[in-house]
Length: 166
Image (tube, rainbow, N blue to C red; front, side, top):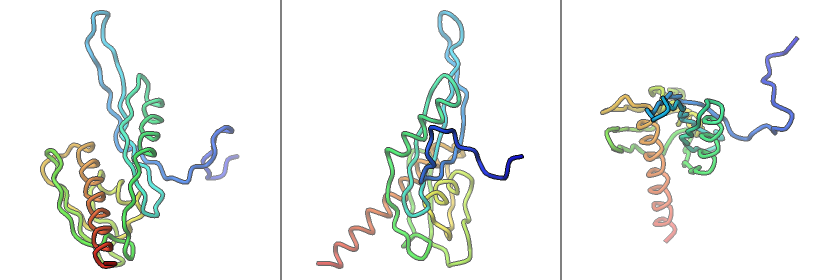
């Protein structure tokens, strides 16, 4: 009889990060000997305290692709400034075909976002935010555009605090 707890393998320690798989793609390549099949996994990792990262892992099997994606995401973490569970100001970002708008929301409104944006902002620990994605439905592009928007928020917030200290 198992209780409602996830079982961890014996050699793996519990992680401080929440890991979420956004997308798994099956990709194939024509070669001389036949088809070469592989997988790509888009992973989002965050500690719900303002740190979040995204990684795209590619491997011949799904489990290796997921593991690679999570490791890449942990290597590329960014810090997001949180003000009362939301971001400090509105930001609009265009990365490739994806346009993402992130806007702070009042307490109690929750995360108003689509699936790709929702996974990134919830992993970062943002509780109240409003967002809109335009231009593309590609989850990978939308996730990367959201991460870029959060990067710019943190850069502008640090610049603002540096100006106030002078």
